[in-house]
Image 1 (cartoon, helix red, strand yellow):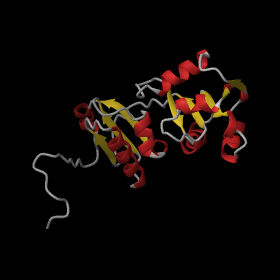
Image 2: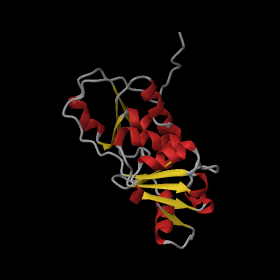
Image 3: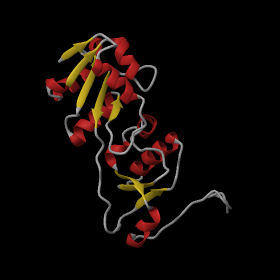
Length: 198
């Protein structure tokens, strides 16, 4: 595993730039933290690259992640460099660079699913993904204009829901509707009524 201690290293500069991106379609993203990295390994195998805080490599969870990734794909960074990549103030000492799965749209939708129409707040998107996963929904469709599903804030609020769902982004929802084989229920803010009002 290569150890890097200079912030001027080209690999570090590229990682810092990647950490600041918003999960653009088809682009690599940075998974930050033990839970997300463990979930990626379980569902998709080794990441494109694994980055570790050199001072935390002896911690059991971090050591297990390092052992599961080919050595050639691993980098160890000084703690101050690792902190620059963390999506929260107190990073967990591990991050994976991954390319999110790209799924083809099904010809027909014959299972329960949720359609997200231009939900722009990343925290709300992540919370909805988490709620869908908890409710047993297996597939979600995000219209163009919805916050990027694999952006750092959505990943953080989703808390691993991404790995329990088939996520389709930039979907033309009206074009999807003719293939819908289940009833459609919609919610909207206009003329809203309390769900629990008698």
